[in-house]
Length: 607
Image: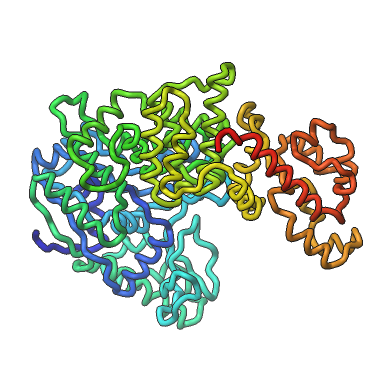
């Protein structure tokens, strides 16, 4: 391999002109802080690592599937469908075949260095679009497109007081605020207007900083000089060129090289290998771009029930594909044979795998789960395999369908509440798949649990498990909806109605100060009440209308108006004295006992 070098500015200018990404590359995964740290490192003359490119010419270059570097990056694949967002990309855009004739004869495809080069591209010529925390993804006002700025008044002799450990203050901003004594925000992209370091320093003439102290003006000049010198240094990017046309060698180099830096995950290796293999076909109709297929399906999954906030990954889809293709679920290079990759391609093209994964997600959403309560996406895979292998009746209109839903719901809640996938998940998937293969069509809950017990896994809801869940599950826990759904089965599952978790005794009154001042409780009793406020025994599932009706009424008055059916449905102790605030700890103990009895009785035939 030949050793070459170039400046950061020159490299960025060549991106998407003669420098592209091969199909085996991963997506851009850096966040804004990582970009900021990279620019700070460059200005401090820290090493930024070497780069590796694959140099190709003529037909060899034209035959490669290529992708562009992301210039205007948006941090999620789910965003508004609006013309204002058309220029933004979360995924690397593919270079269309019809544009091949306009590209130079010699091209370089980056095997190692994509994250760093994209970071430079975004910082110098692009933008980074971020969503406001907790805002809706499809709300255009939730997103802000930002450019990289440098505070020219940064003092490189002093480290900033933040977790990034910067000396030069870089930050992504929508626009530059008015200058102050401490900060003059300069758009980093404008440094490209200078031809020399002297030109860069003279940029201060147009910045109107003459009214600031002399030392600030000096800092600004020196920082502009340092920024330009760092970006224009012809030796700053050191890269090796690989000129072979042997794709096997290139794939091996890619995998090994990326074991350093930000390591490739095993799923990224599998996706790279699938991309290389799936495109190898004499028939154009059978040629398939695995990267586009898989990432597009990930986007489809995450948008499918957008309101639930799911964030499925490439890893989940590839793991599902392995399991549903009846291949070993472990990410081992030895399993990524040409034959196995070919089988995965056939399954993807010729079967209902994608529809079956979506059907499994539909079922989980009907069970009332969202991104918070679905604590392991792996739990969906056996459900998808069951649908794929048996095409079962899952309707509520038939006895068989109702029973299958009950069994699937029990499997899902047991797996998630007991942390079944927290260790050795591939073994769980293998066990579940074997049991489903051998079943006659009914979801083989008992067989799956029998296999997992043999591996030392905790399954089901024995008295010990229920006790542990009552102790550990609180309002803040992601598991609270799951546990409550067992109590209300089949209502939250059957009706597909939105349910909200609600405190039975209002949260607003269960704090020490309120209980002492307004209800006359002793500090000791008040503390006991507050400590038990968020336990699952003080939680219930209500529809939004029920919750709104309850919130505006005094609790003792409200509970006295409830029907016998309400008490029974919510497992509310009927003794009136337990509805008084001073007896709240006893209320919790009594309801915990009702929960134990309910779950044990309801699911005893599965134990």
